[in-house]
Amino acid sequence: MAQTRRRLRSSTVVLGGMGVLAAALTSCGSDPDRRCVDRDSYDYLDGYKIVADKNCKSSGTTSGSVGKGGMSRVDADWYYDADVSDGYADYGTFSRSEAVDRGGFGCSGSSGG
Image 1: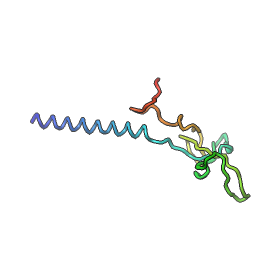
Image 2 (image 1 turned 180 degrees about the vertical axis):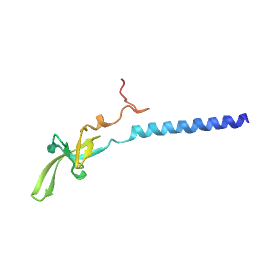
Image 3 (image 1 turned 60 degrees about the vertical axis):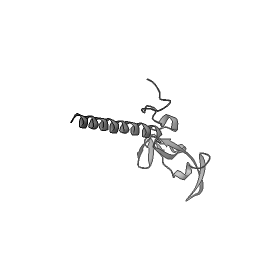
Image 4 (image 1 turned 30 degrees about the horizontal axis):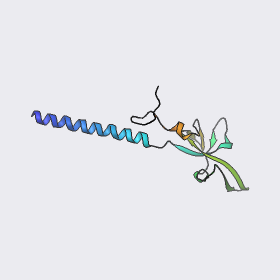
């Protein structure tokens, strides 16, 4: 009977340890939420206007898109960890490194406090 209890405890410890390890690995490897926005479109009530992701995938941040009036320039860039509402994003950051969670268990380069 004592042997059964030890096995139960060992399996509980192993399963619990695997859960902690899985959580640590996923927290360090996950990308922050991002939206492609037009940097020139900021409105103090709404934030930055969200544009198509294809505008942010080009090598530079400025790209052209064809609209009703012909060619227009969009100063597009990725905007991370923003509050999104009605096609606008606000309270985020343009810096991916600032958006990455550095406080996760087991992450290298975590900031101390």
